[in-house]
Length: 499
Image (cartoon, rainbow, N blue to C red; front, side):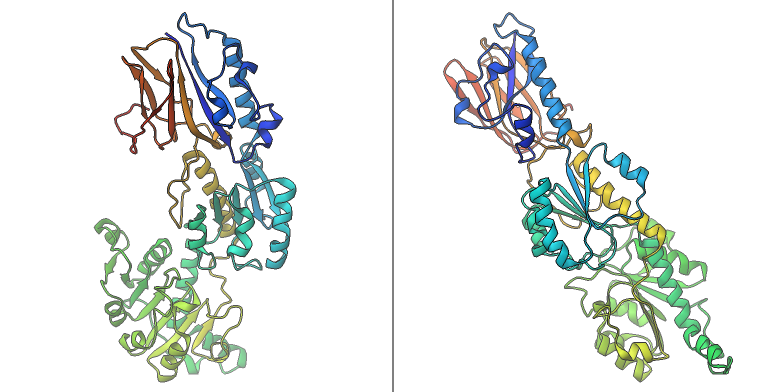
């Protein structure tokens, strides 16, 4: 009983590699095998490649040599066509050894430009010269390259599957545009977390202990009289807005200083996590503000969190409270903060982020009530290294499993196959399947062909009609004596199918 399976294989939406291998739309199956290719092939001008053959029969299609050659050429083609990855700016911290290992599975390059305008000019030229880009990496920090919008990224379409940022924040990225164009956006969820939490707690201690005025006194020669006594953090309540990775690290640090921890978050933590971080959930923002001596802002910037802390929120806070912001400047309404500082409602503020960076409001720069930092909370050597590696790891994960590690958005329905064996096999789209047999098969099962994220099980029972259970629906054609027969494909890949 013998059967042969073909697939129309579209590799990376780019047939340059196919032409190099001698596989073009004019190719006929006779090149690989003495048997004829499916008679209706001309109706489907794609790259028609034989992928599987079972010669355990007396069928006339028993020339194994041609099939082996097809498999070899397809394997070589896939290995030649590595996903192309471009980094905006030369990575400085990920390490040469890491990059050398990365190059085994990816075609890697970097766009050596120094500002946004140069990137706009050079990226299209680079793509025209070197070919489409499958993945794009943005180094940590806004740097000189923002905004990260349609104007910058449009040349990447339609080939690019993922843009990976080494930063935690993604407010500079046009997420909606990327989602519409089926591009994953990933951020770094761990790289800057501890460094930012360190800065958050440093500023917490600094505003409680009034370190800025103390330093000014020492430098001016007035010694310590104006700043004695300061406050003690022990026993004070720290209110954390945004209990993500950074907020959790901050809670751990504050607990060591015997501070009580309250938090406000979109979702309440599990009872186990609340116990682990000694944290109490506040279901509303105003409840948190009214119960906190120090408020630390650690949430992402979005439409919902812009001006999250404004006049009404300051009014809800305890008299003489402190506030720290290491998230994003626009989360706090700056005029409202200045008013609260002037009235004494807020004793002191510690700010690492501002509305109009790199410009800082003159009041904040000159006031003894405000400790300022130039948005450096997450910018440590270890954070840079971890951030760059997380960006590369997101790309590796996408091409290996079909999904990145830390996606900001959700991409559905992009029909690209991932491979359990690595990136080299990750670019194959299978639009159609063919079953060609000269005899009625009582039962036959075609293997996965190592494309587990896209293929399912094809089987024939009794009447010769294939039953197809793909992971992603596609067009399936069965070839019989009367010609091609369309086969309906189910939408759901059943869990009970053995992989």
